[in-house]
Image (cartoon, rainbow, N blue to C red):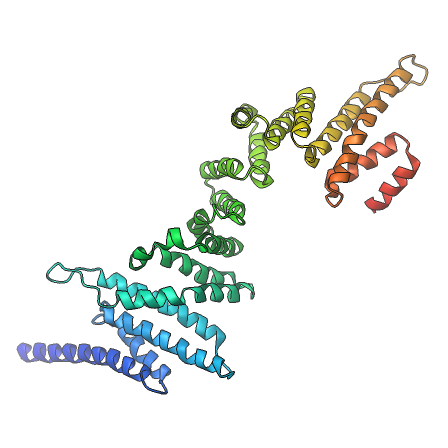
Length: 404
């Protein structure tokens, strides 16, 4: 009796397996017709993709990819004929096609019972993927414009991932694809907006060398490390960012904030000195040193380095602004120490000295305003204080209007 039952179970298993193989063949046959039945084909292949007997067969995934490919072709025919077509469906089909073909190739890499690897589908599928790969960019843009960041990440990420796939090795897309770093940036941007920091860390490094977007990719990378609590990598990325993009203030600002908040001024100074040693006339490096001295309230050295910054770059508005701030701060500090007694013989002398601080500050703030009139945080409050302290009626009234 047991033997009979066992035979029945065996027959049922073989029959079910055969049914799934038949499903794969039928699904392929359905899409090859003049009017493909995509719904039925999807149902059949969907069963085969999850069935234990067929889900590890490369052909199952190849057919699944072919169904997606055929669907995009038929929808594109509608677009050509100016008929309504499924835009989102087309983009998703392209994505699914890539996913299925990659899985197909992955299964083909498994040696057979003789220990050999044979690629039956790789050549044709790789050629299709190479031709259709730009549609992943279009799909990403389509999603990004709808503010669907996770969906945009899916498409942009696939574009980058495909370049690293074994089946694309001969194409050398990592080195030859001129768009790869830019699309990696967009993948990192979408991930950053979605607060998906693991994928930021995955894609941002491939975008850090892009001429236009590299600094932003590195910014996303630093932000991701900080969000994940990896302080060590955050600091390393900030330092790398300063070296790679010295004119982009994000890295410097956050590194200085870290050193200041941690009161690690010696480390900060060492870092600044190393930068200056490599490029003594780099205005940004000189500015960094001045800023550090300013935070340490070593105003004389701060003034010296800010003036050296201006000598190296006469258009460095931030250096002018900070010089004005230092002189104003010195004026405030000195005011706290002097007499307020009008009858004191030192009163007039001390008031003249206070006035001198604000007079010294004035041209620096005015120069910052001239250089960056739209960046009011560099000069507005400073000039408001100076014109008030120096009793400059017309100038004060004009600046007061800007404050409102």
